[in-house]
Length: 66
Image (tube, rainbow, N blue to C red; front, side, top):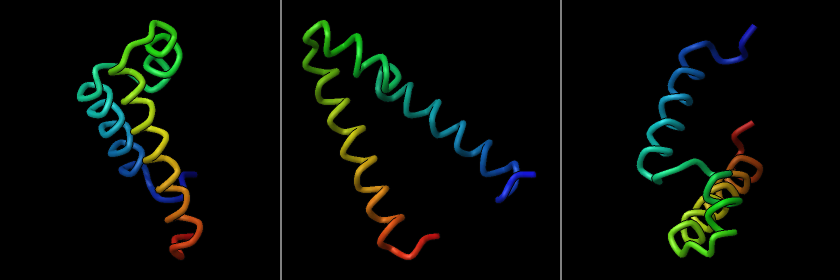
């Protein structure tokens, strides 16, 4: 059983697909292959992904969203 319903998973999947399209690649593609090829765009994308993840974890853990 899904804790919040199937609609949340559908929305999350659509957001991931949209982010992949806007970012011209997935997070692991930019982080592994892009940085290995010394791509400036991939470095910036990876820094944005990681920064967003850190802010999200901070907000969820300290913002009372449990």
